[in-house]
Amino acid sequence: MATVETADSIGSDEETEGVRRRDFINIAAVSFAGAGAVATVFPLVNQMNPSADVLALASIEVDISAIERGQAVKTSWRKQPIFIRNLTDAEIAEANAVAVDDLRDPQTLAERTSVGKENWLITLGVCTHLGCVPLGAAQGEVKGEYGGYFCPCHGSHYDTAARIRKGPAPKNLEVPEHEFLSDTVVKIG
Ligand code: FES
Image (cartoon, rainbow, N blue to C red; front, side):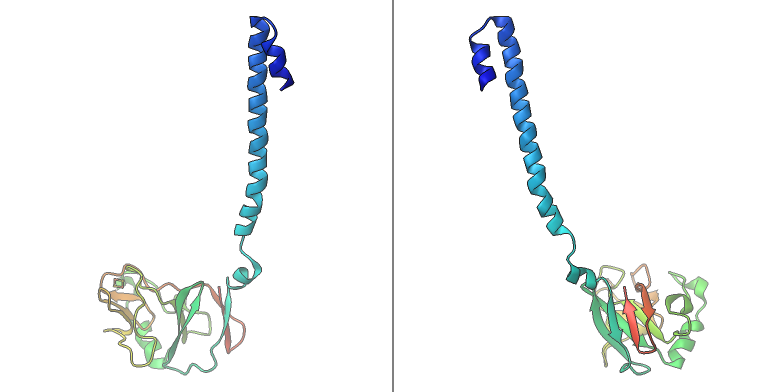
């Protein structure tokens, strides 16, 4: 304000300087407002960081002791369905009998399971075509032509290693990162 009064009361050269000074004051004021905006935005950004309970959901521990051979269960992780399947010896043999190079998404059962835990097939329950939840995990559900999972949305068939065998899905059901904490507890994520 003091600068504006001085500029109005003097000659044109100094007035120009006064205008410049006013500009400077305006710019300074804007800069200050900018700094204020940053200060107020920061807490909002901070609030967007995941809280402790959300971070905890980054992984889950599942007790698999009640899942018998030939059974599967559905659970969820990071808001996505997860299938945990305890394969029978026959299902394992069926998966291992497939010529891997002939598969659309070539992977062995061993590559999709943990060492020494080949019977535990853990996958996302999300069809790799357009994201439907395939059938086959719950008792009595259709398992498709290859005995694994069947996506009724557009007819994708997955085998006993949850590998895509028929239909439009481009990839096998995804295996999430997981680790066995014991023989009966698996950590997913
Ligand atoms: S979403 Fe599964 S076949 Fe299309």
